[in-house]
Image 1 (cartoon, helix red, strand yellow):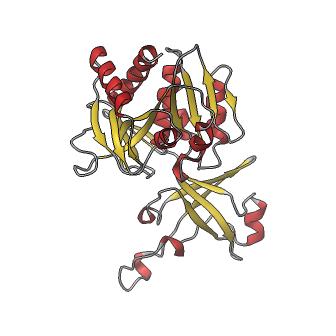
Image 2 (image 1 turned 120 degrees about the vertical axis):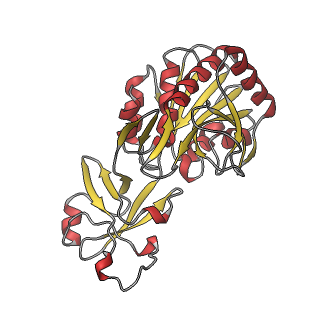
Length: 316
C-alpha cells in the first residue's frame, strides 16, 4: 500500500475507521479487538511491532444558531496553527469541508492574539438546522484537510504521525513473520495500547512512531536522513535497555543506519513497558509534528522498514 493512501485516510483519535479499513484490506487474517485495535500474527515470532492509526485533530462540541461550530482539540494540537486552517468533518456516509476563520487585518486596529477557544469552524451553513442536515452534530470529528507532496528527499503530508509507522509495518508484514499491531487513541493517552497490553502474548514489543525533530536539548544530535532513531527516553521515562542493545546490535550487524536520541511526549511503548513487556520505540524523525505539513525523509522510511524486517528475523 502506498504511504499516500494511508495519509489521506481520516482518523482522529477515537474515529479511526477509514485507516482501520485500509489496513484490514492489506493484511490477511487481521483481527479487530473490542477497542478497535488491529492485530495480525504470522508465524510464531516472540516480537510484536506496533504503530498507531490515530491522528490529532478536533471534535465538534456544539453548533451555534448561526451554523458555526464550536470545537475542542483532540491530542496535542498547537492552537497557533488553527486560525486559517482547513478541516474535513466526517462521519457515517458524509464528509464536509470546513475552515477556521479569523477576522481579517482590515478590521483590526492592532494585531490581536486570539485563543483557540474563541474560534469556530465554518462549514458554510447559515443555521443550526442547516449544519445538522449535513450530518454534523456534537462529537463529529474534524481532521486537518489532506495534503501529500514529494519535496526532494522528503515527503510532506498530513498525519504522517503515525501513518508513516503504519506503512512501515505493512511493508515489513509482507517480508517477515511477526505479530503486527495497529492501535487506536495513542494521541490521547496510549489508550488502545493500554487495553491491548494486558493480553498481548509476546516477549518483546517494538513501537514504530514518528519523532519530533529536532532540538538539541530534547532529541540530541539526530538528523533527518541519517536513519531511524532508537528512542531511549521520553516523557514516559526510559525504555528497556537490554532490548535497546539488541536493536543496536542487529542494526550494526545488518548495516542499517540508526541513530540514538530522546523525545518529548511519549509512544505506545510506555503502555507495554508498564504492563511488564520489554519495549522500545523506533522513531522516524518528522519536522513540524502535529501540524498539517509534517515532513519525513524518504531514506529514514526505507531504513525503518529494513530495521523492522531485521528485528522480526532476529528476535523471533
